[in-house]
Image (cartoon, rainbow, N blue to C red; front, side, top):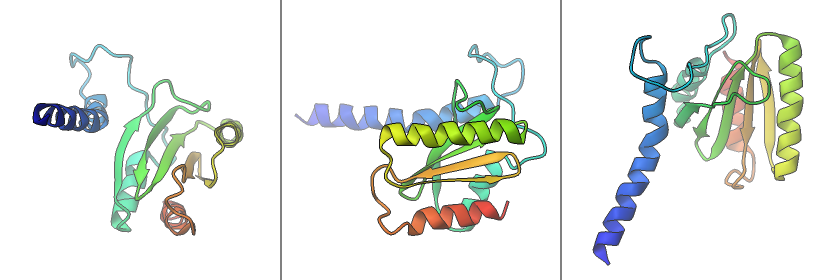
Amino acid sequence: MMPRVVAFVLAALAIAAGPSCGKKQGGAAAGSSNAAAPAAQHVDGTPHTDAAIKTWQGAGLSPEGFASITPVPFGAVYCEQGRVQAVDALVCEYRDQDSLARGKTQMIEQWGREGVNTGVAYQTKTTLLGVLDRGRRDPNGKIVSQVVDAFKKL
């Protein structure tokens, strides 16, 4: 029975390490042996995911597991998803306001199809933040509010 537990723990650790390892490869120099599709590029002139993560870290909110999403959803140029405290977060960068408005509508419609109980979409320049509490771990909305408030400072 013990070998199965060890194998399960090792498998869980490998899965947990996967997204963070992939993110580091995404930033590899051109000429690396990464044979995957070309990495999506950040959009100039708008806050990037890294800035949001640093802001949340500075606010003591412990962001984790952020990794780029391929294919990029909601008509964005670049998106990363992860968790901040107990809630899911998605940060997407758009080229223009029209694309962002369409993406925001699509995001909210997707949440409706999923039956998301609590979700907030907030934009800064042409970067869209989606914060949702799928697991109902933030019943009073305190964490969601803190995540959005920190993002507003970008």
